[in-house]
Length: 467
Image (cartoon, rainbow, N blue to C red):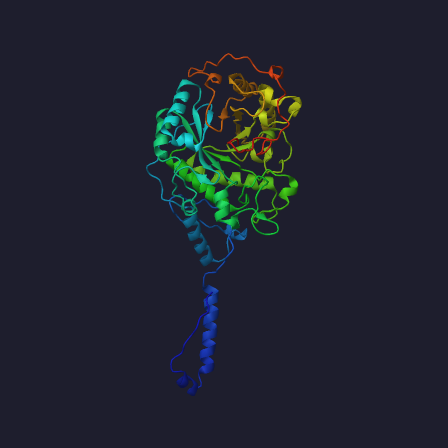
């Protein structure tokens, strides 16, 4: 509080009348009263309330549980100040001209669209034509990637930190084109690897244990996965996407950095409060689904491929049992090229895509069976080449067949350039191509499955667009 100065007129008169002592006492008690009832000043970030914020700029409700849990200061004036601050960060005018949402297909069979493909009228048209000719009925579109939002956003914090871009100049027009063609639009939002937010708000970022910035072993900044301000920022972006006309929210990078354990020991998560990594991820998923419940859309999450079979969290906070009932769909990234030689007893995983995908999905189905409220399973499949062999229609179709063999019926294809192998897809009537299933014996040279991709071993995004 700024120092207050009081000036008294007629001081000599007061002294002559002997009332100086009384005046000093009155000033003393006035200062105490001001200190007691003035709004508190807290220069450190305070975790936001767990109650649901509204997109239209309404106040955020504060409950007694929030105060008791230490999420808010136990002072009405300070709480009001915090609410105003949160509204300024995350609230935006309700969108009234959004595109009506496309209903979820009985089985989602999709492809990924990067921001460039989405923003290019010609390229988008080509991909829409692909969907109309084939079984493809869903597009997973980059809404937020690398901290950048693909279109101009009305979320105040996004605008303030320069996160919103114009890669897609008219997102409503894009969504209308998809609706006109019956294509289900999914908003892909990268959550915790956020270079833009981490640089703009280092108080919300992962910090080095010795102080200062922390980057992972690939030179990327991350935000604190335990921080509810970070949660609410991404949820605000999701709200806006849904009001614009997206039909599903898909969280990606909903995990901790994939780095060696020795490197992770240098990372400090200021909002952790003693929680385990896997519990932090679970809490975010539960919280985000609750906050988005009023939109009545699926809230889904991408996970590493090995989460389907690994019993621990692999050091990134992703543990199947902690996530499978906290989201509507889990999407394991079971790219055969990302599995090490000998995984699941398969000598050359990249050369045996059917066996890898089928086995990974069988693990997922077994671990999900009997879990009340369990998520659906929709794997990411590989439509790109990394190492040997070069992937063609038979390799892509073999993965799709592996999904079906495991008793599942949904999948999404990933290609960093958003270019897909039409010959691997069933036509619009559902007639699947007759292709020879590839095997290890078809590889002219050993698959380079011992090389770890630069971005991580199992479904991690790597330079060039893999995720």
